[in-house]
Length: 417
Picture 1 (tube, rainbow, N blue to C red):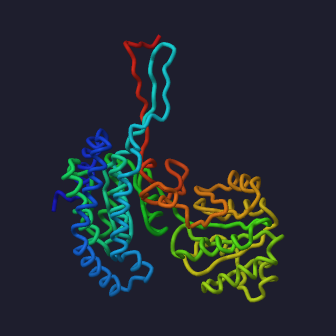
Picture 2 (picture 1 turned 60 degrees about the horizontal axis):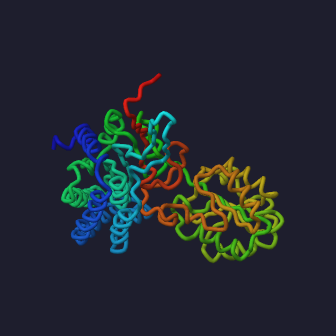
Picture 3 (picture 1 turned 135 degrees about the vertical axis):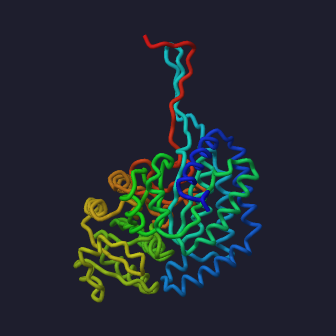
């Protein structure tokens, strides 16, 4: 179908973005609500089509982790709907006056938030990204081009078409939400060349996909490669609390980017807390790999290698290192970490402040599980992913992060002297 070529889609998105930038908050929220209603009406059809794609993925020998991400059940579907309704309730990210003043000569100068424009989302296997991405983009007045993995093409297309119908019925431009309907790498390669029309790309998926996108385009990319997340248990930590936080950080969901991968323990409390840590992780079937000092205390722990400190396991494996105080912990994190999420367990406010100021991470948690770093638990409503970049967005990418700003000046015949 000629009207679905990537260039045509990109052009249509650009013209939709121009119209979206002046839409009211009421209209965008109505669109989000109608998108959710439209999806709710096709739930049975979505579950049926998705089940077929899951069977096909199994037959093609896809991994269990991938199949888990691909599957939509009742609970997942209702969660997807709730995210759309929730993002509609968030404050309007647009037309906020970020700063402003009136010059002595009466010239009024202010800076206000505006949409980025056209956002391309390239992702693998998770159909919930289809609805999350559309929701966050529409809330922030951006046109969105969706490109999911071929394993979920029918599910994603069904979801996108329902949302398009809802958005258009509310009065949004026809091409505010679009999806690339062809499988294969060609469409993605073509999208990467569309820097005339696309303002930002956001890849969601494995490191390979993100690297390929970031290295293959001139379009700015919001990305995160790795989630090598650390937790440092300080010598004054409440030990019971520390064990619970470590276990939740690692075990609550093992295959996600904010799961714990390396546990750092202060040498002054190591002897007492390590047996408690081992018992807790043994009961969760987690393999522990320890540094030399750890091996002296826990005789049967697997030795950790230099590679372990650089590894995002996404698996039931945890590396443990004993450190000589907070400075060594911070140094380890800044050397081996990926700037995603790092935490400390301590009762000292000054240690918490030092850690929070010196650790170079998008999210720093004090006495809380690393699993909390994300849009939902931060109260941001829906988010489109997490960024470990420093420009333009860092940490959870929600509606506010998909805006930029413009300077607006009101004069009354003012001239430059």
